[in-house]
Image 1 (tube, one colour):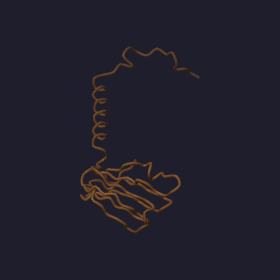
Image 2 (cartoon, rainbow, N blue to C red):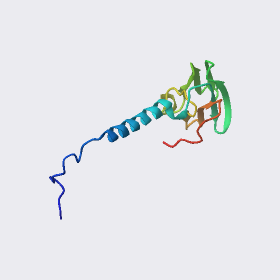
Image 3 (cartoon, rainbow, N blue to C red):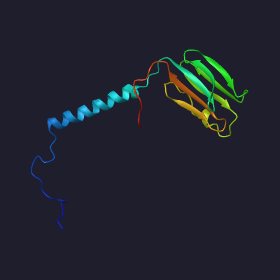
Length: 133
């Protein structure tokens, strides 16, 4: 069995060429572009939709500042400065409350015990059919 450890390689075997540097820079630039672009989701004008099960309870524009009760006051949703959150809920673990603010189209907050979904939908047509993470 041959062992490659400690084998002498010809001079320049591990040398970085200008082509390598160009390729690395190109990959880094593409990564920065896709991070800055944020996957096509834009924080533009949108609607906050609140569902209980499959029934739409409330629809509020993101531009409007409003706090409202859901499920006869058992849960409160706040829409402010282009973002939304669940202020309080009577569920046991309060995971929906700890989710915090959502602001981009496609983001959701779910309260499973109360079967409530808070979702942001864009008013403009979507540019991407699906995004895989």
